[in-house]
Image (cartoon, rainbow, N blue to C red; front, side, top):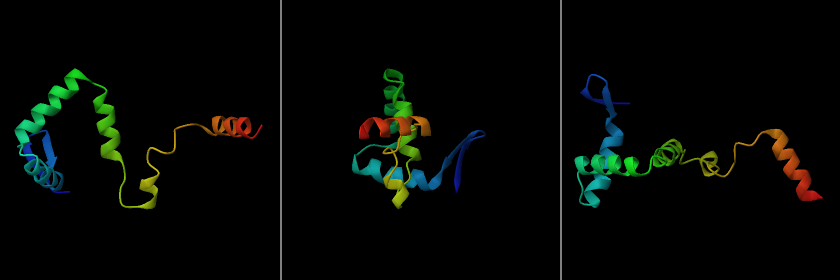
Length: 88
């Protein structure tokens, strides 16, 4: 990961910045507008942070990535109970 150092404790991934810049150019926006828009959105709806984290951590390009968001966080007992309820 190539990091762009903005300040002492403010590092950004340069590859992600390059990809985001290309997308923003297509939308006729710049990085400052995007960051301001992001902060406005999370102040109005803080639950967006959870959604953004889930999207950012989602794997792509492999079979297991297709299953992201499809498999829940249930423990084995809950899965077993649900299975037995469905077959009865």
